[in-house]
Each structure stands twice: as structure tokens, then as C-alpha cells.
Length: 220
Image (tube, rainbow, N blue to C red; front, side):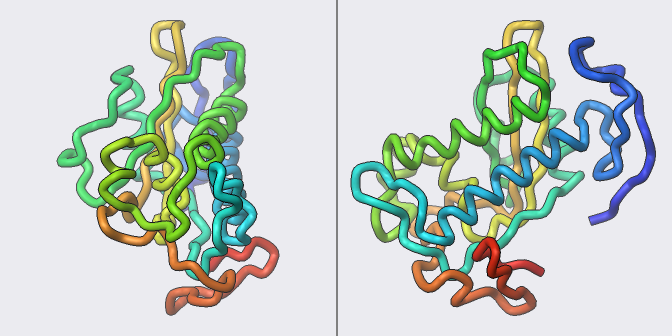
């Protein structure tokens, strides 16, 4: 991932956001580094919770530990696509054919008083709540029923074991709501595949990665 060190004035952001914020992660003026970091850190924290077998899984107990959960990094190209779609203010997921190999989560946030980092944390928390509210089968298998009911598909994309890149966008849609879009690569939610491999945390980290014992995530 190429890091950029240019500074931009956030002229496209509503006036209740600070202007003149330095962007060193990506250069798109519609996002801030604090929001990017909030998206990344929050989602990695949830992935770590699952990897350690500590996620409350509906009414069946806790998630089994994950042997191959990768740590996410932030991707500026994914962010650009997420921002572009968020700016359409369309609350339905985009056509997968327009983003081959890329997963997507989308949500509407009605709390217009929140800052961008707060919106990022609110969105990811709502996706995470799908686990405790509805639960996933004990085998962590993405089957026909998960795909059909679509009650936990944002959660499953967020914790898909090899979705190791994420980029997100936030847009204030006509002063009515924030539309939040995150995109993931490689995409998850693949029918008849395991969300992750159940086993000792970091027990099956892919080649070229190593275990971070503090988070139980596999890192490059």
C-alpha cells in the first residue's frame, strides 16, 4: 500500500467537520485519517475477539477460535470506490458485477451529530451486533440459509478470514443521514465456504504471515 503525505482541506465535508485535517494514509479529501483509523482498528478488534473465541454468538455461546484470521490493512483504492458509492446516497448494496472480487458492507446512520470517527465506530458496532443478535452456526460455515436470510452477512464479511484489506467512505446525504460504505478484498461471503478455520488461534496462519500474540491475528 502506498502511503501519501499530502495535506488537503476537507472542502467536501459538511461544515460540522474540522477542515484542514492532514491526510497521510490516503489522499481523498472526503475522509480523514482519524476516521480511517477508527474503521481499521475497530474492525481488527472485532476480528481479534472472534479469533480468540470471545465473540458472543447468538444464544449458542461464544464463537470458536480462529486459526487463520488475518489482520486487516487499510486500502486507498478500496476507499475510493467506497466513497464514490457512498456519494450516490443509494442505501442498497452496489451491483457485485461493478466490483469483481470485492466485498461490501453498507449502512445508514441517522445520528448526524456524530463526528466521522464516531460514525465509523457506530457503523462497525452495528455490523458486529449481528453476531450476538442472530448468531452464526457453530461450524462457522457460510451456507445457503445465511445467504438467503441476510441477517448476519455484514458481520460475516467483516470477520471473513482472508479479507485482509478494507477501505471505507462516509457521506452526509442531504443532511438526513450518513451513508457508510466499506469495501473488502478479497471478498468474503462465498457460498459453501468456511468463514474461518476453527482451531487454535494463529494455528494455521497462511504462508508469509506470522502470529501477533497480542491479538491472535495473522500479520504480514
